[in-house]
Amino acid sequence: MAGERPKKKPQIKVVRKGPYVVNGLKHLKNWKGEDLPVQPVISLCRCGASKNKPYCDGSHVKIGFVGDKDPDRVPGEMHEYVGKGITIVDNTDVCCRDRSCVVNLPKVFENEDPDAASVEEVIATIKKCPSGALSYKLGGEHCQDYGRKPEITVSKNGPLKVVGSIELKDDYGTQPWCKEHYTLCRCGASKNKPFCDGSHLDIGFKDE
Image (spheres, rainbow, N blue to C red):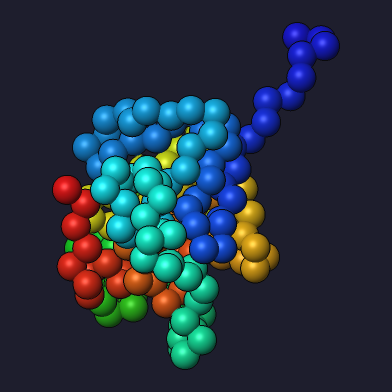
C-alpha cells in the first residue's frame, strides 16, 4: 500500500570477539525444523562455549574468544567441472564438509563427472549444499540464488545454516562467496571464521 515503509531485511553482525548479533530475523529453527524463540535483536553463540546454545550467554568473555581467521590457513581452490548440459562450480574454500553432495550423488561428486546423472538430479543435489561451495552454470549463467525466505537453521552439532540473502556485516569486511546462502561457525574452531570449515567434526562439537 502507498505510504508503507519498505521492510528491513534481516542482518547478521559479526562481533570481532563476540557473538553473531542478528537483527530483524523472523525465522530461526533447530535441526528438527522446530521454531526457536526470536526477538527483534538476538545474539547467537559463535565461540562454542555457551551453556544456552544457540544463544550467547557471555561465555566468549570468560574463555577469551578471538574470532579471527587462522593466519596459517591454506585457502581452498575454485574448480569447474564441465558436462554436456551443466557445469558444476566447486569453491572448496568455503566447504563446510556437509557431504550431502557425495551422499546423494556419489557417482557425480566423487568422480567429478556432471554427466553421471541428469541435470535435474545434479541441480537438486547442489541446492542441498548449505555453504554455497557448490553452484552451477546453465547456458553460461552462474546460478547461486534460489530465492528462499530469510531463515537461519541451527544444524545438529554443526554450523548455522543461513539462507535467504541475509546481509552479513563483519568487522573485517568479510563477505560470503554466495550471498543467498552460507554457513557460519558456531563451535569456535573454524580456521575460516566466521564461516564453517567443518572443524566441528574434528573437535567433536556437541550441542546438548
